[in-house]
Length: 249
Image (cartoon, rainbow, N blue to C red; front, side):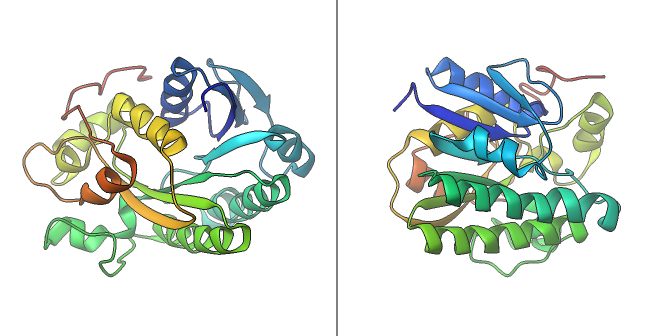
C-alpha cells in the first residue's frame, strides 16, 4: 500500500523522475538509486556494481522499478555490457536476496523494431522478436531474466516495453520527424501513471509483458490491451502533449 518503499534505479533520468514524482504523489516513499542524485525523494548515489549499496537500498522495499541502463545503442563492452547486463544481474540478485515482492523491468519497443516499422500493426506481445541492435538485444535478455526471477521467487515481474520518451529537445525533434515516433511516444505523465499502476495493482505471480505508450497520433502500433487488462492503465496524452515537461536542452 502507499507509504511503503519503492526503489527506482535510474531515478535521476527522465523516466525515473516521472516515476518518482508520480509515486511520491501517491504517498509512496521513493528511493532513487542512480549515479546522480534525484530531485524527488531519497537518493542513493551509487553504481549497480556496488552490491552493498544495492542491498541497503532494497532492504524492506515493497517494489523495485529497474530503469537504469544505457538507453540506446552504444559501445557494447564499455557501456551496454556493464550497464544493461551486468547491472541487471546485480539488481535482480539483490532484489531476490531482499525478497522484494514486486519487480518492474524497463524493456523497450525496440525489441519489435522490424514489425514496428513495417507492420502488421498493432505489434502484440507474443509476436516474434526483431531487435533493432545490441541495445535491444540487452532488453530481450532483460525479459528472459524477468522470467527467471519470477520463477525463482514466486513474485510477479512486469517487463514493460516502453515507448519513446525523448531525453532532450534534439531527441524530441527526431521523434517528431520519424515515421513511427508520434505513434509510439510515451509522455512523462503517462509513464508516471503507468508505474503507479504497476506498483499498486494486485497481480498474480509470474512474468507479465506489456507495452506502454501514450495514445497514438493515428496508428495503433503497439498493442495497449495487455497493460489495460493487467493494470487497468489507460494512456491520457498524445504526441506532443507533455513532450516539453521537465525536458533538458
